[in-house]
Amino acid sequence: MEFAGKKVLVIGTGKSGISAAKLLDKKCEVVLHDSNEKLNKEDVLAKLPADYRGKISTGALTEDEIKETDIAVISPGVPIDCADVNNLRNAGAVITGEIETGYLFSKGRLVAITGTNGKTTTTTLVGEIMKKISDSVFVVGNIGIPYTDNCELTNEKSITVAEISSFQLETADKFHPNVSAILNITPDHLNRHHTMEKYIEMKESICKNQT
Image 1: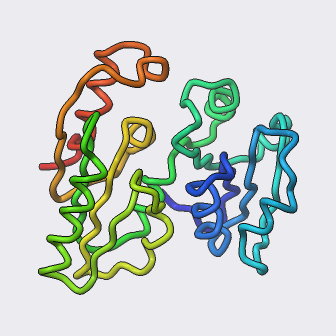
Image 2 (image 1 turned 90 degrees about the horizontal axis):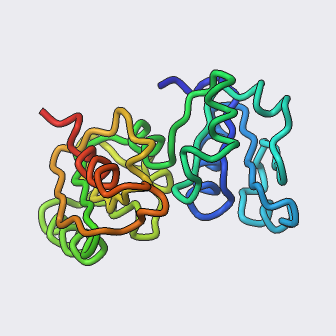
Image 3 (image 1 turned 180 degrees about the vertical axis):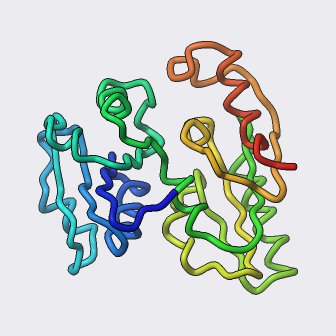
């Protein structure tokens, strides 16, 4: 996916959205959006670099914002079947996520870990093990450090260890770990995925691009 020269809508002003906006602001035209119309834009700006060039948008997406968006980078907390995302998709925007974006700008090897329980502990331990064999290790993802925070610091010898949730896998397309692990799958997040079958499908998709 090519971001250069594109109009990118980043949805969500939490850690993932802020991190993605900071990364992409250097490469394309960015609008950072949050559906909370009561959100103070000055508070959002305070989380961004002083030289941030993009726009900040709150409340309902306008028709122009939908029509002008080439790529929408959605935060994990944003359902892929919500009205805004459906409208963007129907208008021709490419829908992706922060994890996918970070992956596309990273180098080196990737270990990705998912599962209903134990992800954070396992990711932390694997990260510590990797630090014994590499001087360039990054632990990212659902563990609380956005992938887009560190992706441009990676090199061909880097090892990234990523904790990946089912929400993050919904927007993973080219995401291609060298090693992946599904620790376990028990009923969870069915209000988001609707059925156990769909939840399992999301978890299994962590390895869909591995050969």
